[in-house]
Image (cartoon, rainbow, N blue to C red; front, side):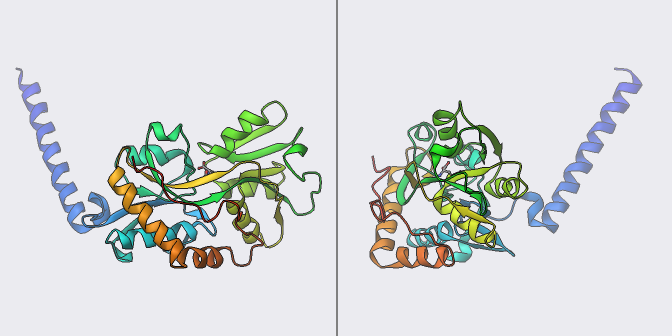
Length: 282
Ligand code: GLU
């Protein structure tokens, strides 16, 4: 070894130690720098940008998914301050469960066979249907039969976008965004003619638009909302299903729906709701 290489190696070692010491100090000073303390807590994935379902509002979390999550968490032995809420965008849900970033996901998450290759579900705890959201003054779209030549927006990784590609690929232009709020913005500004996803999500967006947007009201799929969990955890699925059944039985489910759809003209499809939670038990 030459003098120069020995010197360089020593510099690198010193630099590495200094960096490690710095990281330790940063970690001691702020929890965020070394990961928040999540021990003894349950980490739940929800949407942060879907009014009425999962919505982050000045540091608090509100919506139907949040209410179901709190109820289930309580039955699993976690108080509200033992919940760590994490944003679970449509496209990232399977990976978040597979990586162990969250313990469960309640994020308007439809139970599908394809997703069951990667994760398991408990539930269902709600049944929605895919519908269309349009500008209030646009009367050219009154159902899925009017989509010829229209520009649609939906979300990457959602069943809604998949259904458009499967059923209407030849007649529509599909724009995909990371979330439905971005789609609503595109609808306001005239970049698209309609937003498509579950009716209950669209009802929340319409309500937040202060009369500028309306839901068409002709649902064309059934979306069974499940609680996403790690693949194969049948014991957890059983506990979650028991909690959901209890929530329906004691009236909390009905109340949560009423509270979170207040001010919208939305009512759940009574043919399918409330559902029987039997998913994931074997
Ligand atoms: N329920 C549908 C899905 O799981 C659409 C809503 C969403 O993207 O969260 O894909």
